[in-house]
Image 1 (cartoon, rainbow, N blue to C red):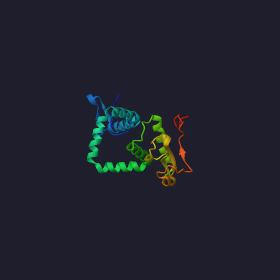
Image 2: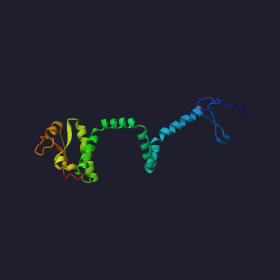
Image 3: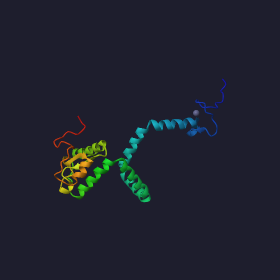
Image 4: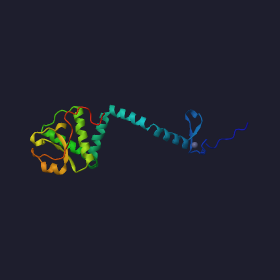
Amino acid sequence: MIRRRVTHCPKGHEYTKENTYINPGNSGRTCRICNRKRAKQYYYANREKRKAAHREWAKNNRKYYAKRTKKYRKEHPEKCRAAVAHWKRNNPERVNANCAKRRALKLDQISSFTPHEEYKIKRLYEFSQLLGPEWHVDHIIPLDKDGLHHPDNLQIILAEDNLKKNNRLDYKPALFIRIQAAQDTPIGDS
Ligand SMILES: [Zn+2]
């Protein structure tokens, strides 16, 4: 039986010096082009698995990231400022929510929220964002008048009403969206 010298891999790539990978322990050779292709396929096929593994690792190595982030922030302050500005432009409702929270904290009018209350607040700000810039989240009793930053004291009103209302207690906007105080089942769940 004549054994012809194999010059190409099963896919037809030539076994040149550059394209030939000698397996460990000298146990044959493989095609580098095919190896790369297989590795790439494996890489993409296992993307979710790899991501999950990395998330798990990150969860257990928070200090590593905290340190790295701190270092990066110190070395690239202008990049960080730009990134924050970019995030703020894309998340106006989160910015509004955070501003209101910070203000309430400052005025010491924040209660410790249950997860459900926290959720209600988040959804209200998200809903306002969905309605568009002509709608504002407003504190029914203004924070400056000792109103609480609490879902029961929040409403969505028209921006023009919000301006007219300012810090007045007697201004009653014709149109408002409120979360029912007695609503105890999570919003959006059936
Ligand atoms: Zn090949």
